[in-house]
Length: 502
Image (cartoon, rainbow, N blue to C red; front, top):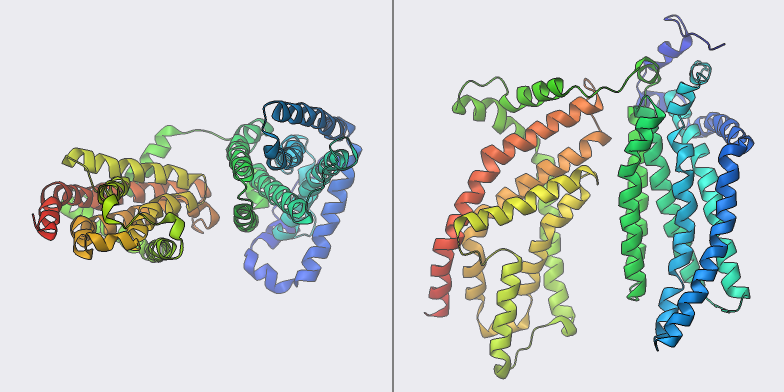
């Protein structure tokens, strides 16, 4: 019989204390000791459930064997096609895929961490224990991580062992094996911590499984990118991906611990899509109580812009950093420098023109210039939602890296620095602030789930941030982009001709 929580139970009394304060009451050692009690209980129950663990470990044992047979077929194909040198680049791919396969299957354990127990009516007795939210969350998360990691390590060991002692006689470098294990571990932690966050914020296993697609699909695309990087023999880039994944894992873990609340988990009975409430919330925060355009800017737009001060500073620093980085690469990498000889003058001019087109400096009409910038910023905003704002910042930074790369080209001396300034500076004086504001709003939209407002739910905080994105975009960014487009199309060419002496 399930335990009923009353208003006089110890759980609500514990929940009056914020997470940060509870960390002050319990030192890290005591917190981990209490969390491991939950972890041991969860792991023991998971290994007892043969309906879950049986298929996972059977597939973990079978898939490496299938991968070894596929490896033999690919090796014969490469040798027959005269591409034997590519075999060494191909062999590390399947260990990474073999490690990823059991993680994606074992994700069901993490997805059922909280919501599964709620559906089975076994969650209330656990939540009635005198454990803090943090201890419960940490214990549950650690328990959800162990089975996927064990299955992944087992699959990698079987597959790599088969290659080393089998007919292939593969002798990989220790660094490569460490890299594959690090990638697998980082991906597993990101997927599991993300799934635990989903499980703690949904009310049914069905909803959790549907939301899991927002975890599996990005990681699957990342595995494809890693495969391409490995095939092109640029393995050093994978270390940066490992660092990024571990940072994402820390963000997800801290986010889950911050927003986890046992009272909300027990009290939430149904996930409901209330479109009218969503519309009212966004409209209310978009208008800000204004009745005319002047009041809208004064009461709604400008306060939203002021809230973007910190993310705007961060975005500006990133853009300056990548600009300097592009300049340094052009100076330090002779293999990436454009030709400087007089005979290649036409080729050099064509290369500069194509690069300026990349950063949007060669639009032939105002609508085209504005549409290009709007399309990039909207895409960056959408990607920010799925990446805590990171991808939005990266996409907005790329043109500034190209501009720095152009400025660092020794071949630019043939044209003079004046031509560069004339082609870039006039419209960028207006366009850069617009890009910084739009990217800062997108960053805040993506990161708001990691630190929601204390007086709002995660959904309400996100809708308020979405309204801020809309009003800053419509009220400030779009007008600036229109002005920048007019300058780019009608004024910048005049400065370019003057600088070129034409």
